[in-house]
Length: 399
Image (tube, rainbow, N blue to C red):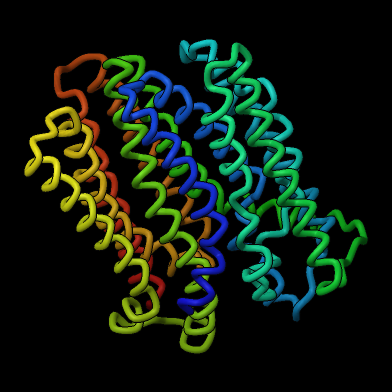
């Protein structure tokens, strides 16, 4: 499993690793304004990307397994294109209520192509066929190209457009290479079936009701901070969130490798005991613990060398890594819920919790003095609520 995780994560490490270096370069310059702008705008593009995937990295292996190794790719593509188009329209309406700056607006001008191109991705198929060794390294090209844009074009007057087009170019290369590699391995079924499209659309909506709520939730927080506190704090939050995202995405890649074994365990026994629960997902916990240890070590180093400039940044980072560890447990339960097919239950729980928490954050930032502390407190309360809700559903389903 470790080898499979490393293949899946390789592209991400190439992409997000390069973006981490680009943002760290900006930290060294004290340029938290650009960190905030780049983080928020690319975060929104990646949210559109996840919507365009339609949950394919989890749903496609499940559909193929349930259909004796076949997938009507055209039906699934149409279903997630319909879903992502609706999501895209709703997102633009939602963002119109925020006073976004010109930088973010200019980056989003080409965001339609993110949705269109990534709807055709075949990442879930590559996972199912264990082709991560060849397809994994190309999955982070969008972030790699965006990082190159930050290093070489940040002072250019058209930098927001260059950044957006770099992200889109990376996605385009990834999709073309994926299908070039997969055409030799999988016989696509290309018939048009309305009933199958509707079935796929229901699956996509059920999964993404929760998944995109949690993804959108994390993208809206820095926008709220930027508008109600100040750009420096937003920049620190975005940078720390980028560090947290590196580890959370590694955990997601780990989950993709673990999910196949969880599906097999659930299909055999329709339940999973506590020991197996942790054994099958141990790599996720090890990643989260490593993240907290590394962040704490970095903070100790700054204290030893009296680097006061970075105290606040690393304090925010340590808090985020602690929250990440709690998130690992919560999302472990969610993965069991998804494997058991409780997509609507999962979606409603996350949808309600995420948006209620965001509203609470808005009230804290606009009408109190709790600031960033209130944000973190509500994040912890949300994760506790999710964990309790998942446990209740799993207990009722006999797991």
